[in-house]
Image 1 (cartoon, rainbow, N blue to C red):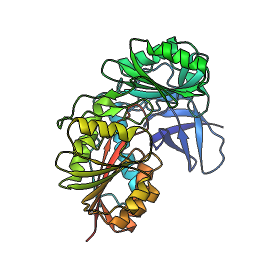
Image 2 (image 1 turned 180 degrees about the vertical axis):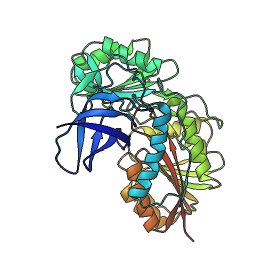
Image 3 (image 1 turned 90 degrees about the vertical axis):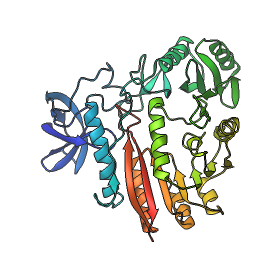
Length: 408
C-alpha cells in the first residue's frame, strides 16, 4: 500500500516517526517536517516502512553529502540539519528518561546538549567489515550485507589514510574485520580473524606502510600499536590500542571529561567501573583517591602506564564490575560508571548496596540508562541532572552524563 506521510520527529535508532490511519510508521532516511511517499504493509500497530520518494522537504532537511548514505548503515541522519539533530537528541534523552525510567520532566535538570566541535571528519577510530576481496566497509542499512566504503566523511584525514593503506594491501585472507585507530601522525590497525602464516606475512608487509606504527593480530603484536594522546593538564597521556575501546570523537573527548569532572563535584573517594584505558579516570587523578575497575584485556596496563608516567596514583582492579562493587570496602563519596551499550543492570544492584552519596552514570544508550536509572530510583536515589553530549554527529548515537544523589 502506497501512502503519503507527514514526518513528525526522529526516534531512537535514527528512524523518523510518522502516522497513518492511527498507526505508527517508522521511516528511514526522512527528516522532521518531510512529506514522503512510503510503501506500507498495513499490518500491526506500527511498522518500518520504505520511503519511495520525497514529496516535500521539511525545514530540517538538508542535502546529505555522502553519495552512499542511502545504502551504508553508518549514518542515518545526514539528511537532517545539525541543529535539528542536536534538538532531537536532547528531546530523546528526556523521552527515554520519562517513558522508560519514569523520571518526569521538570523533576531533574536537563542540560542543553553539548555539540561536537566538528559535525564531519571527527572520527579517530573505526571498525570496518569485509565487503569482498580486498574491500572493507559498513553494514548496509537494515541488513547484514556489507557495503564497500572508499571514503567516509566522518573519518579524520589520517583515519582515511589508514583505511586506504589497508585496502591497498590487497586481500587479507581469514580477516573478517579491521580496527583502525589514528594518532597525531601515525596510526595502528587491528586484524581479526583466523591467523595463518600467510596472513602474518601480509601483516608484516602492511606494518612497513608509512602511516602504520603497529598491528594487533589476535594475541600477537607487531610493531608498537599503542597510540598516546597529548598530555592532560595533570601530565597524563591517555593511551589506546586498536583492539581496545577508545572514544571515537577526538575533539569531543575533553568536553565529556569536563562534564564528568563537573558532575562529580567535590567527591574525593571514587569507585570507577568500566574504566577502560582511562578516558575518564586520568583527569580525576589530581587530588582524588580513585579505584578503577575493568574486566579484561590490555586496557588496565595502558592506564597503569599512563598514570605512572605522570606520577599519579590510582588503584586498579581487574575483574567484573558487579563483583568488585559487591566486595568493595573503603571510604566512598561517589561511583562513576561508563558501561557498554547494554547497560549495567547487575552492577546497579551492587552500587545501590554500597549507598554512595552520588552516582554518575555515563551512557551511550539513553534507554538503557533510563532502565538502570529506574533501579537506582527504587533503591533510594533521585535523578539530579542529565546532560546529553553529541559525540556521534550524523548518527543516531549520543552520550548522556546522568547524576543521581541518594535521598536522605
